[in-house]
Image (cartoon, rainbow, N blue to C red; front, side):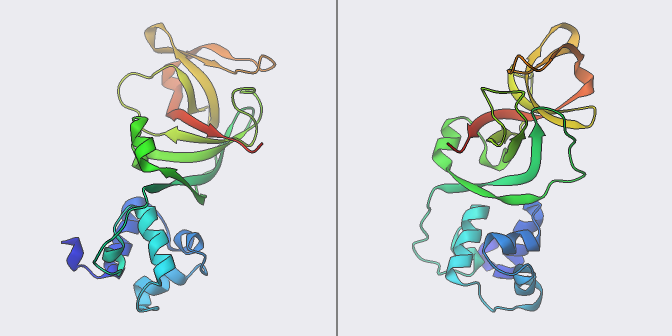
Length: 212
């Protein structure tokens, strides 16, 4: 049972399951890069402080008591922290990096996410790079990507990879698994007839936020 596990064991298991790393989580809680590793591997500190424990519990969506908090009246904030990746989806030219790294988190109400039919564990945030999707999406906008890809593709704005380029474009399905890959900005060309097998769809864009 999880309740019987040591908090260090629980935290390490959650990190592995979520694909996180010690340094990134240490940064998330405002500590030096080795803080989480020292807690897990060396037992220092003996217990996670209340503030740091609360941040980690909300991030992983678990009760604080399994990370060493008091067992009584664990309250849920209802806020789900969605990872923001240090990668840009090109709305113009640009290449995807060799790997994605954590750039931070943005909190969303979990009930609202589920009401939209979204699975919070399958969401990520990235930034738009370029203006080929203006005025719908502008350079620097944060976009939420639903990484679930099951069944037939729904027409709409997607993040996809084509010729090793990560891009955000409007996709529309055609006959015989052909795709239209289009820009909303008329100044940029689109590809009205692309072999669907050449396009790797990462996920559908379901939300966008921007600085005013």
